Length: 174
Image (cartoon, rainbow, N blue to C red; front, side, top):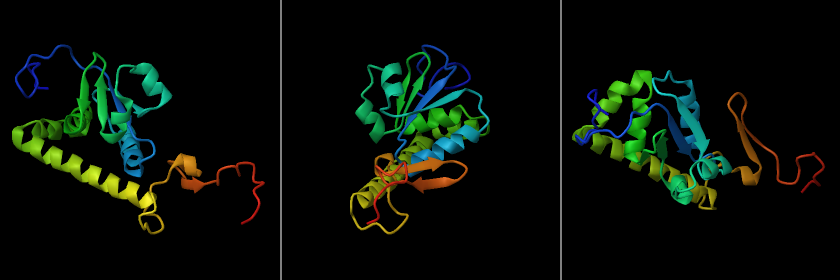
């Protein structure tokens, strides 16, 4: 969004963006890391971080393809704007005080190619992590940690594991 209220394509903006909701894959370690990083950043526009395809996301955005939000970052503006892929990253950076100049550079044609490359690299990394987590030969620590498998993440203490069905500590030893 340029200072004169137009987007990078020169079209008049329909409504100002006063708040953004970032839908992120809560089961993805890279996405969780970026969520935590975004929470620590000084903001010019408030960001709400909501797990993609969660009950909250489905309740708040009933017309959205929630399956697609797990495949590609999706950011929603408070006036109904929907940003996906590289545009979602650029608008998220635009909301951050220290990264707005970078967002403006990434909104140029040359910057858009760089943003697209970064999104493709992140998608490739996520795909590799997912395949490793599906029995593709991952080494310890190189897999996707899923809540359904008993993993949980705390920003202070990191990852912890409780085997499913063992939450009360009464599991039989293997």
